[in-house]
Amino acid sequence: MRALAVTAALLALGGCAAAGRGAPPPGPDGQAGGARAARRVTPAICGRISVRRTGTIHAAQATELSGLVASRRRPGVLWTHNDSGDAPRVLAVRAGGKLVGDVAIAGAQATDWEDIASRGGMLYIADIGDNGRQRDGIVVYRVPEPAAGQTTSAPAQALRLRYPDGAHDAETLLVDPRSGTLAIVTKSFDGDSGVYVAAHPSATAVTTLRLAARLRLGLGGLATAGDVSADGRVIAVRTYSGFVAWERRRGDSLARALRRTPCAGRVSLAGEGQGEALALTADGRAFLTVPEGGNPVIRRYAAR
Image (cartoon, rainbow, N blue to C red; front, side, top):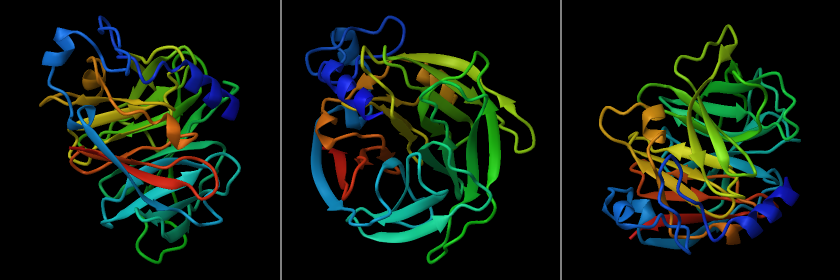
């Protein structure tokens, strides 16, 4: 994964390309170009951005963080987890870097955890990584968001999923806070990512995902994380070097919103290191990130 990250950073051409059919070509900074793009209503995070470091996580448990989401129940808390190789657990941290929770997820296995999302008091943990594209199926674990001081979760529900067209590697999970629809964005070196959705995933049977959209992120644009704001209005997907975002229209399903052309962020994320995490704030006007590696730095990117 680290070799892929380095190669992707070299090929990312300064940011994400615009996605979708008929998308205008990206400019030198990765921003979608042309008058048509300029007239499009876009999320605030695609405009001018201020960036600041909010803290550093000095915790032995935080070695390879991959996935980040803002708590819906505990203001100021972020939930995160490690990539493959760790026990099935989630970590709670403050934006300032303080570790405030280490919770074992009962009934779960950690094959290759890649992303985390939140909806309605529940956490969704995506065991969807598959570098060799060999897994017959993938799993998203749904568990009640732990309370303060809790060290073991209630038993997780395993939402077992399979693709309709063979195995894929993926690191991005999106959960619609309105409907509960799950969307998984695949990770592809050519930047052509599939968006696979499950509107009503089952906790008792395997659910076959549906290919609902394609994101064209440009050569080297490997999708590594994403989030939907708590109000459901903003969607973001990041790569190692940049991000794209959508302002969701009234009445749009998650799939329909993702079929539209997104805006591309003006700020580069390449300097973070190996970035595989992004958490939107509740109103979608800012997001936080944390890279892999020891003593990782939390950064906040906010619309000016």
